[in-house]
Structure formats: C-alpha cells, structure tokens
Length: 324
Image 1: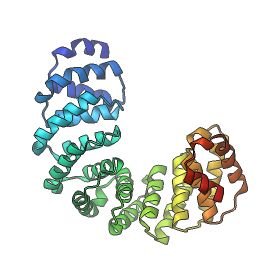
Image 2 (image 1 turned 90 degrees about the vertical axis):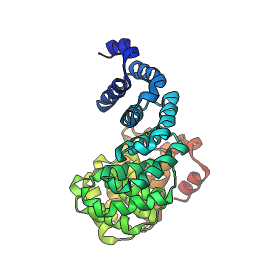
Image 3 (image 1 turned 60 degrees about the vertical axis):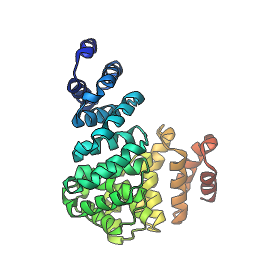
C-alpha cells in the first residue's frame, strides 16, 4: 500500500499528506520512504496547511521518531503565522512533537505559550498534561503558563487518566514548580486509583514527591504497597527512581526495599545489565546505603557491571557508588 502511495504523493493536497502521516503514525507503523516522500511533498505546500494539518503532521513525524529538520522548520514557520487560529489540541501537538524529538524551538514554544494563556480555559486534561510534559522535557520555563496550567489542573484531576496524573506530577517537579498543593492533590487522586496505575506511574509520582520534598506517610505507604505488587513489571529506571525517591525522603520502607532488591538482582543476573544506566546503578546503590539497608547480594550484583563500565560513570556517580 505504501509503495503505491509514494508514487502518487506528488499529486496530493495538504490534507491528504497530513492525514496519511497521521494514519501511519496512529498505527505505530514506521515507513521511512513514505514519510520522507510526505515530508518532501509537504515542504513546498506548507502555506496550504491549515492549523489542524500543521499540528497533525508535526505529531505524526514525532510519534514515529522521524526528525525531518526541513519539514519541522517549515511547520514551525507556518505555525507562527497562524498561531492565533490554533485550538488547544493544535497547540499541544507541536509542543509535544518538539519535546519528543528533542527540538528546543524557542520561538515556536514562546508563541504556543502565549496562545495557550489566551485559551487556557478551554484546555482539557490531555492538553494540560501533554503541554506540561513537553515544556518540562525541553526544560522550557514559562512561569505564567505553568501557573495557569497548574490552576486549571487541580479542579479537573478526576478527569485525568493515570498517565496524565503521573506526567503532570513529573513535569511540575522537573521544572521545580513548587506547587505542593497540586502535587498532593495528584498523589491523592492517584492513590484512589492504584489498580489503574503502572510501574512508570508509581516511579514518576514517587520521584516527584522526593524532588519537591512532599512528605506524607499515608501516601508513601500506599504507593509502596502498590509498587511491591507490581515490582516484577518495574524496569531498571523505575527501580532506580523509586529507590532514590524513598531514600531521598528518608522513608526506609523495608518491604519495599527488599522487593526492589529482588527485582534488581533478577534483572542484573538475567542479561539485562546493559539496560541499567550508570545513573540507575548509582542511584540504587546510593539509596540502599542512604537508608542503611545492608544488602550484600545486591551490592555485589551492582558492582560487577559497574566495574566493566567505569568509563560511563560521571565523577559524581563514581563518588556516590564508592560512598555506598
């Protein structure tokens, strides 16, 4: 199908290009030649793209992780001209695309921020969460917009799906937005829906609490109990982040740390050593030492891959793992 599409692309209009890119991205089907042909055809037609076409095309290419620089620059330039016509969803998609392909397009993000402030009352949960996540991912700090998004989020938290809750918590912590009221409300909402959360949700929320210094024994105990039940699904980053978070808050939950140890040792001995970054290994070792949970088998399991990858360790990581 895609080969036939590639042959006919030169005759396509803007909406055909945008819709096809969207369809393949929605199916998580990465067809390099097709997407390249769409990008080549879209560039000279970019002035014909309406706001929906621009937003959808940016989202589609970022979704399949194709960073076509000429196309993204063309979309950005045209979006700046038409920014006043963008709906909240159309504003969110280009911001999300910039973050996903690690493109800090400051002029576009500045324009999106200004437009978002004008339409903030129309933002739904997904718009709020994705915009915050995008700004945090590229570390674009726009305090008025962050405050407006936070204010919109709190009364709507019951409408947020679990991933939106965890992404919002992670974003405000990443940008050091000291809105403990919002974070506590997010955690409370998450605790009410523990069975719907996944391992990444738990680790992100715990990390956010530690980063902003939110101490709440009932909330941390609830997250700990739920994390233990799901520990077999935790990846290396989730393991490291959760252990670091609890240690940073000096919350030495022994059953949680025992569960983390078992999961980490299994993954480190099951051919997944390379999945642990130097930061993951360091944070896990530091966390156990920090809360004085002596676990010799875990430290030995961490030491082996660390010795083989010392060149990957930053000076601070070397210091922390040696201290541990």
